[in-house]
Figure 1 (tube, rainbow over the protein chains, first blue to last red):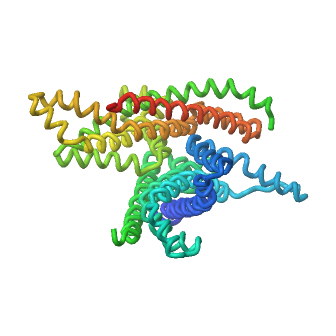
Figure 2 (cartoon, helix red, strand yellow):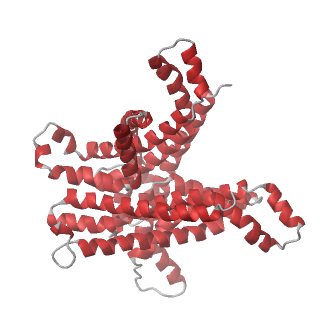
Figure 3 (cartoon, one colour):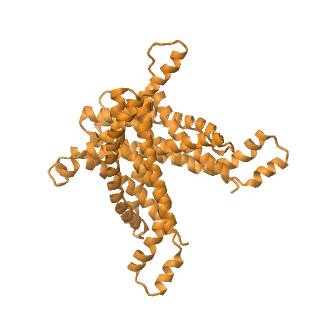
Length: 230
Length: 224
């Protein structure tokens, strides 16, 4: 237990901060993912064939390629791409992007592909009559969506979004390859300096289990809230 | 776009694909047996066995695959006792460590898929078998298992694709699989986009094949 002491003698505080980092990356990635879903869900549902193709290729490519490969693309290609854009505006100095931003964007794009699929499925399962009824009642288009369709869509989407959250949370472990100090990276450092990998990796597993368990509890409450009346 | 690099990296990446496919097929092979075993345990009425199987699938589905590989590859070598047993022959190889981790992981997911498939079999099928005087063992092998396989095919197809993506983690324990080689080429040439396109296409092609193969099997196993 000495190994987990807080302060200078143990790894307790480092691992605690690393856990917060994992949570921070997961939440950021989830939000980035929602932004992507906001763009690509309408594309996937659109009747325009070209827009449809863009939406479909996003979800197919990202869901068919390993997460690690996407992370390598961002890790090695991220600063190059930013510098290319910057050079068009006349800025030629070297730009380094921080590992947190690269990591959250990479995981965010992955989680966005899963979220897009979830939202598409949920929107398609809202009863057609609901759209028609809200139209007949004379709601404006955006009010129709916000007040009638979205609450029903969320009820259907939340159970699947909780799966996406679990996947995202576990995927953050892969960012450790870029050097961002989250649970996995911190355990790697601790295991290296104490020569006790079994203990630290098992402890990392316990931390992840705790995170998934606690978030499941929270999401279940959210689910209850959105399924009132069903 | 560096087309020359793209074409020159294709043979290297294709030979690495063989490693990926080997990892995938071996871990799926062992994973099915593990999954079937734990699915059967989950259906047993014995509370201890039931809890044990539930705990197994909970732990392996609740933690990242990367942690599981690291525990098996870096962690188990630390136990002195293991080093003196026959097991060490297997555990000192990163190749087998990766396969053990993948098989245990996919086993946990497979057990959940099979369990829900077993539970959704209509009791009428089993009762029909019983009333025909067929023994419980034969009912299990000839009625329950074929129906469960058919029911679980779509979900298992997804699991195969997830596992294929999971094998990319073998590159973190020094194995040169498709992702490992892709990373090596990227870090020596600093041309991430070109390599990503080639390696990504190979992965997508494999996804496509698996997806269609499962679709074909689904059609074959359907009642019509």
